[in-house]
Length: 138
Image: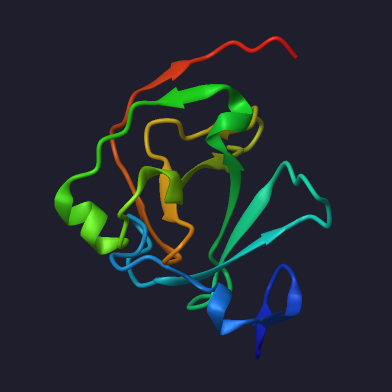
């Protein structure tokens, strides 16, 4: 276990086997390549936080795309699959970055989801993506 101090969460223990690596970083944060996915203490957390382990001030609030009823027809290039070592579509999970500009509603960046390979724990941000909205009876 590693002890890491993060500005929002304080001292946290990080198992090196749970670190998510973004080989190219996230656009705008290319120097931050290693992250820890944190969540509320719940069996079905609604929000997650992607905390950079390279810069304690870099933190993204995430939500799973399916929670918002979004159906992505996402195509990754061979190169992108190689970056995150993705061999099977079911190993990929899509997350959206949430933001709240001052004085505005919370927004989800639906055009640039994060794709994380749950097996290799490697990720990338896919830019300029279109999603269909799926309405569910809940």
